[in-house]
Image (cartoon, rainbow, N blue to C red; front, side, top):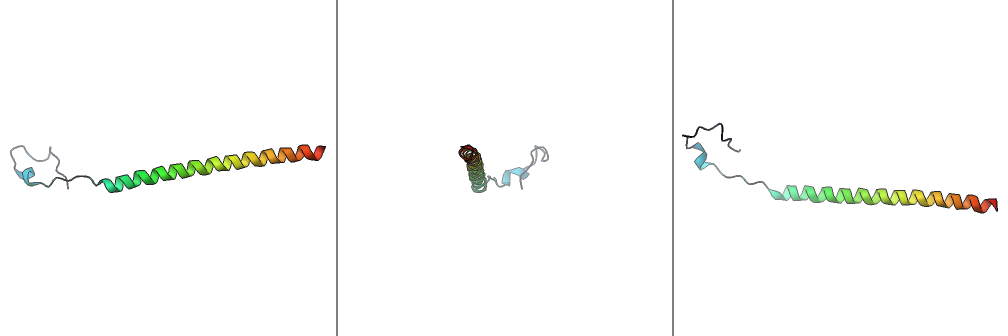
Length: 69
């Protein structure tokens, strides 16, 4: 629990024995790494899907051209 400075009067000694709380960086770092991996994975999947769709389209166009001859 953190102490809000505006709640404790200035003449009180209540905040002098308070424990300093530092944020834990491990969960934050894990979330950042997980989010980065998710973005990289989705970007790769979407790129590959668009390439496959483009290749299928080109393949069908080539098959149409070859069947007309």
